[in-house]
Structures are given as structure tokens and as C-alpha cells.
Amino acid sequence: MTEQERQKRIASGYLWKDTDEYLEHQARVKDLMYEFNMSRPSEIEKRHALMKQMFGFVGSNVWINQPLTLAVGSTVTIGEGTYINSGLTLIDDYTISIGKGCLFGTGVTLCTTGHPIDPEERAKCSMYSFPITIEDGAWIGAGAIILPGITIGKYAVVGAGSVVTKDVPEYTIAAGNPCRPIRKISEHDKEYYWKNRRFDEQIP
Image: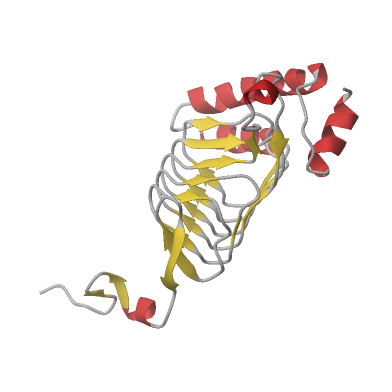
């Protein structure tokens, strides 16, 4: 299988396998990832430069805390103003699109790739990949796992520790394993920021 054939199979939703060219690309990107992860906290400009080399696109004012784990990099786009806390894992064999102004807690995993259930087929190192989309303003809680083919809608909130197996609509709070919608974001959320704590509450 050539690299062009591999990419065509992924885009069409068919099983695929690693190619030498693909593995060579991974090795180059992981060297950049190593530099990113080993940089000093004060080396902000260095990390921003490395992000632009690793990813397909990075908007302005994007912040990613170390450590970061990825395989491809060029398949990932990140919109401006997005904040990603430490421990992000990207299984990015296919496209991951992260919108503007998104917020990621610690230890989030975005996984575009899976393997067949059948043991004999799985032993052949066959894989499938489907894209992940995180739309503008979404908040992904700490430890959440987002599986292949998922879209998280605009301004949606995914609760900490959730395993997301189905799309989350925009302006929706969802949580659990498997992740399920709990309620829509509403006017109530403009008054209260946490339980009974109001935005306009004054310190005694």
C-alpha cells in the first residue's frame, strides 16, 4: 500500500495499514513533540514556533500546556484563542478540527482511530479512522475521551471523565460513560456560575 492509497482509504472510511512514508513522518513530528515537551516554562515563543511546525494550522493566542502526545500533527487544526491544559493525547491519523475559543481540561484524549473487533483481522494491524470536530467555544472536561467520528457542537460542555460515543449538540451539557446529554445551556447559566453561586454575588 502506498501513502497515497492509505490516505484515500482513510478518507473513504476503509481499513488501512501503516506505510513506511507514514511512519517516517511520525518520527519527524515526534522529534518536534519531544522538543515541545522538554522546553522550559519560560520558552513560550519556542513552543509557539513548534506548534506551527507540528500542526496543520494554529490560530493566534492558542495555548497548550505540556505534555502533549500526537502522531501526525498535520491533520490537526486549532482555532484562535483555544486553551488546552496539560496531558492532551491526539490519536490524529485523520483530521481533528478544534474551533476558536475552546477550553480543554487536563488529560483529554481525541481518538480518530480504532481497530476491528474480530481478533484475526485485528492481528493484521488493520485500522479505521474517522474525523473529530470540536466546534467553536466548546469546553471539554478533564479526562474526557472522544472517539472516532464525533462532533462536539458550538459552546457544548463535556463533563470530566466522559467517554463520548455520540455527537453532542451545540449549547448542550453532556456527561457520563457513555456520554449523554443532561440539559441545554440556558439563561440560568447567565445568572449562576456554579451551583448556587451568582455572578453578581458580593463578598461579605
